[in-house]
Image 1 (cartoon, rainbow, N blue to C red):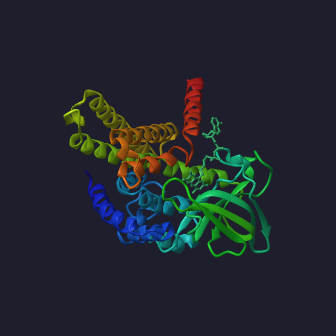
Image 2: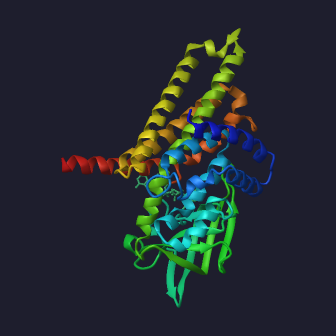
Image 3: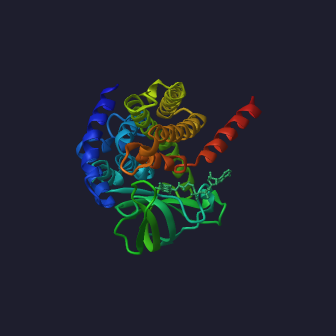
Length: 369
Ligand SMILES: Cc1cc2nc3c(=O)[nH]c(=O)nc-3n(C[C@H](O)[C@H](O)[C@H](O)COP(=O)(O)OP(=O)(O)OC[C@H]3O[C@@H](n4cnc5c(N)ncnc54)[C@H](O)[C@@H]3O)c2cc1C
């Protein structure tokens, strides 16, 4: 295990206990962020020394996310959202944003990334949030939903329409909104695992244009392509924990006069869980390397996210089955993993969207050959 992986494992085990002791989700999320900041891990989510490519090493993100997810989905989310939420600021290459990026990298400001709308999920070209130019700046009007950190965020990168109608991808631009901006309203809701999330409503909300007008979709996709591989790595963290829980339980629990681990059917399960996890890790490693090298990684990233998240869901499901009734009891680790891993097949591009990306690239290459 690398030095970073070891450090993250030890940190996450300590931090998870402290976070679990906090009953209120938003307070638990803030504590997670403070601990991640004190440990110096958040610096890996924004440009700085030691990063690759645009200053954020995907290999480092992956190592950290696997280690955090092994212990706590909330730690994992609070870690990655600082990077995902602020990466459009990095892409804008505007030195005047340096201080804010540093504050995000220290956990002093909380970031969010707002693409999804009630009528625009997988199809971002349908975004309807409008940006209007006024004297000295821009104003936003619209509604974003399913936004991680919506209840907490101090800085929001927002994809909004500066021209055209639904379907016009060139009419989208990226904006930065302050958490205390007038006309910004938040509503939170719960999903099946601990995750600060909700809706954001903009009404004449002041915003700052990031990068070029019309480059918004490119910046959004650039951000997703940088961070998507790390979703696959987090999936490996949940799966690794599920496999460990299964291994422990099957050796301890006796039925029919012998440990469950002696039954061949369950041994076959363990072998398959391990093989899928190992294959997922190899795909993650290949994708992360290519993204960090600046190579075309569309196929590798889509493959890694698709396979790792689907496999991890299956592995967590098997672990629940291995624990029998205990597997679905609230408070059991595998019950939590089963809920925590599920959203990874949906956010940052669903499994179906990954298949579409992969198939499109394969067909393109085949027709060019
Ligand atoms: C926990 C969580 C956190 C999230 N955090 C954020 C965030 O921070 N910021 C943000 O902007 N968004 C966030 N999202 C939203 C997420 O990105 C969207 O849910 C996702 O992109 C899917 O969009 P949708 O929910 O509108 O589903 P839809 O796009 O309506 O899709 C519904 C189903 O149809 C399938 N489908 C859609 N189009 C096709 C097609 N062409 N072919 C085949 N199948 C298709 C999808 O794969 C899916 O199974 C989050 C979601 C969750 C669950």
